Amino acid sequence: MTNGPVPTAGVTTPAAGTARQVRRRLRGRPSAVTAAAVLALLVLLALAAPLFAQLTGQDPNTYHDDLVDSARGGVPLGSFGGISADHWLGVEPGTGRDLFTRLLYGARISLLVAVGATAVQVLVGVAAGLAAGLGHRLAGALVARLTDVMIALPMLVLAIALTAVVPPGFPRPLLLILVIGLLGWGTTARMVRAQTLTLRGLDFVEAARLSGNGTLRIARRELLPSLAAPVITYAAILVPSNIVAEASLSFLGIGVKPPTPSWGQMLSSAQTWFRADPAYVLLPAGLLFVTVLAFTVLGDALRTALDPREASRLRVGTGKERTT
Image 1 (cartoon, rainbow, N blue to C red):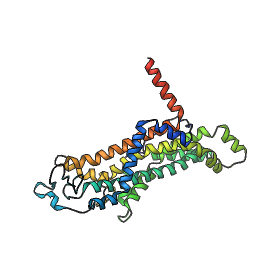
Image 2 (cartoon, rainbow, N blue to C red):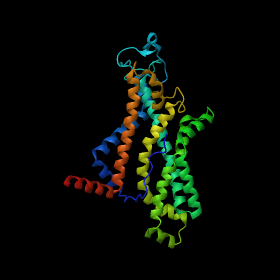
Image 3 (spheres, rainbow, N blue to C red):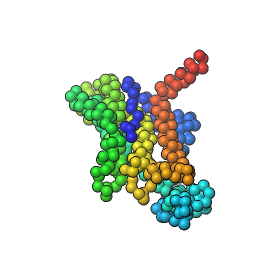
């Protein structure tokens, strides 16, 4: 598990347009529209998981021993993993639990943990980055060094250690949110600090300081609106990284505990069934891949839509390539 994408040095402040302009630029990119539609569909399916469970008459945790072949070690009966009118995507090997409802409930956990951890990373990272960029030289240096330490720490090892010592009764999704979020805010803080150091020397910030505004007021009134575009863009890139982080922890058996499903947990239990029932591996892996890809494409589109200069650079670069 990593801290997420590391921002490059010398980042400039995007010239954020109005919400209407951003929507228009996003609509002009078919890849962004497709990615947004895929994510909206996934979120709707995850939210409607109880409704689909009622519609199909299947509970994600109910065992169906009559749907698996015990003589063959629990391989689902029937074609394509036991697909039928009652089990739209087949059943889970060994248990016979309905795979469709487990995938939907697993999407709830994966998306909840990823978005929640991203929110924690953004909140802590923005606060630390502003403190490092606006604080006294000594305080700024201390926060900057702490940020470097957080980025350099072996996050997977720490996450395993923390999840192992927490009492079993603690809600596992909340634990994953806190572990991933509190151990992964370093790159966000570094990006915000770089932006803050650039912004604090601009005329509108100097004017606010000369007018007698304090540091907190300057941060709230002057800097945060200018930081909104890069932070939103970076958050959209962090979400797929956190989806992979949750899947990695659940794959290793330290994420959510059975019978609560998650995509990473399903992949962990599916690795022994690849030859006997490939669908059980390919379905959660495919959903994980599509979700990460959609968030990545949408994050890249947001970066371009919130920074018109980026779009201009892309057009100029394309034109130069065509002329060479």
